[in-house]
Every structure is written in C-alpha cells, then in structure tokens.
Image (tube, rainbow over all chains, first blue to last red; front, side, top):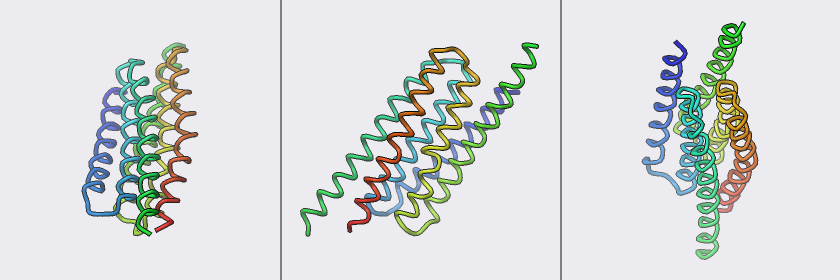
Length: 90
Length: 97
C-alpha cells in the first residue's frame, strides 16, 4: 500500500517534470529557460528523495546533494552570462 | 507498538510527499500560465524550497538511520541557502534588460 502510494507520487512528479520540459522547449528568453531548468532540478531532487524512501536506499540522497549543487551552479552561471552579455551590448 | 509507530511514520511521510508533488505540479502549471519572467520565478521558487523541505523531512522520517538523516539535513540546508541566491541573481539579470 505504501509502495503503491509512493509510485503515484512519482507519477505526479513525472507529469510535473514533463510539463517543465515543455516550458524549456517553448520559445522564450534565456532567463525563462534558466528558471524552468532550476525548477526541473528541484523536481528531480524531490523524485530522488521519494525514491530513497521507496527503496530504503541512502545512495539516492548523495545524488540529491550533487544535483542541488549542480542546479545552483548552473543558474548562477547563466545569470552571470546574461548580465555580461547585456553589458557588452549596451 | 512497533507496528503503530510504523503506520504513523508511513502516514506522515505520505502526506508530506503528496504535498511536495502537488507543489511541483502547481509550479509547472504556473511556469506556463504566468506572463512575466519574474512572476514565473514567483511560481518556480515554491517547490525549490518548500517542496524539497517537505520531501526531505518525509524521507528522513521514513529512513530513520542517523547517516541518512544527516544527509537529508545537508540537502535541506544547502537548498535553503542556495535557492534564494540563485533566484536573486536570475531576477537581477532579468530586471536589467
């Protein structure tokens, strides 16, 4: 019963991740895509935490730590890139 | 007695997991429907902090061993520190244009 409920939660997170990927693929500015990518990273982190509880495995938590650091570095890098590019244009 | 504790653990973690997943769904809808970059960031920052917080507490309640709880604390503290910093830098770069 508990296992099935967690599968339903994983399915909900998968639907959310697919909708966010659709947002990334839709035409838009770079900042919009960076925001969507950041949200996608946190949704995948939630999925890893659910999977850690479902399979009783602590290894997924290490993956979640790495994913959180990568998402932070990616969004900061893209923000710096947008600022530098616009400073060069004007 | 141990079965009762087990059931309480299951109920707490399922409620928190479902709440985190609903936050993710709402944020994904908000990313499509809201009209501005910064209003989209308003929708996107909810699962980044509260969703990860709820899922982390639920996983810690379910796993229970000391090393796993320490890892979950690291995840939550890292996310609570880094998510506002990243959102601040993205918002500043979206404002300047």
